[in-house]
Amino acid sequence: MEQILEQMPVVVSSLNIGFIQTLKLFFVTLVGAFPLGLVIAFGSMSRFRPLSCLTKLLVWIIRGTPLMIQLLIIYYFPGLVLHNPIWGGGEAGRFLAASVSFILNYACYFSEIYRGGIQGVPIGQEEAGLVLGMTRSQIFFKITLLQMIKRIVPPMSNEIITLVKDTSLARIIALQEIIWAGQAFMKGSHGISGAIWPLFFTAVYYLIFNGVLTVLLGQLEKKLDYFR
Image (cartoon, rainbow, N blue to C red; front, side, top):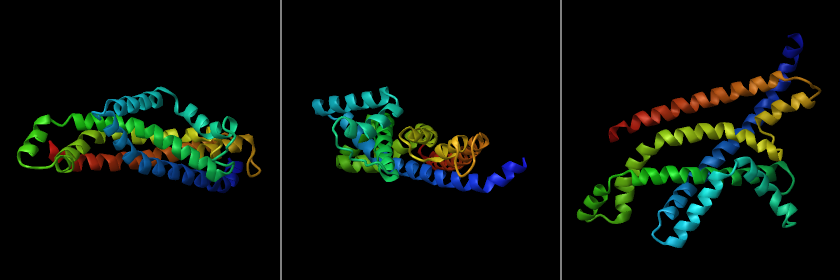
C-alpha cells in the first residue's frame, strides 16, 4: 500500500494526459460525425438511385465491419500498400487517422438514427406545411427537424455513451489514450513496471465521464418533452 501511495502522483499525472487525449478524440468525433451523419442520411434517402445505393453500401460496410479493423486499414493502408504514409508516424498523425476512422464510423451509425427520426415524422405534417405555402427547406427546419431531435435523443445518447468506451480502441494504432497510459505501467513506464492497479483507475475516469454525460443527456431529453 505504501508503494502504491508513492506511485500515485506519477500514475494520476500520466492518466490525466491520456484522458485528455481520450476527450479530444471524443469531441472531435462528435463534431465531425453529427453533420456528416445527416449528409449520409440524406444520401441514403435520395431519390437519385445511384447515390442512394452507393450511400447504403457504404453504411453497410462500415456498420458490418469492426471499428478496430477500420482503424488499422485507414492508418496503415496508405503507407504499406500505396507507399504514401499520409498520416506520418507521430502522435499527431495517429490522432488524425483515429479521428477520421471514428468520424466515418459514427457518422454511418448516426445516419441510420437520423433517417429513422426523419421518416418517423408523420407525412401529413409535411403536406400541411406545403398547403400553408411553406417551402420544403422551411418544413424541414421548422417542423421535421425539431421533432426528429426529440425522437433521436435516446438512441443518440446510447451511441454517445458507447463512443466514450470505443475511444479505447485507438490504442491499436498506438494512440496514447487513457488505457494506453494505464497499461504502460504493466510494461514499464516512469520507473514503474508490473503494476496492474492503474488500469482500475482508468475505469473510474470512464465511470465519472459517462455519469456526467448520462445526466446531461437526460436533462436534454426532459427539455424536449414538450413535443409529446
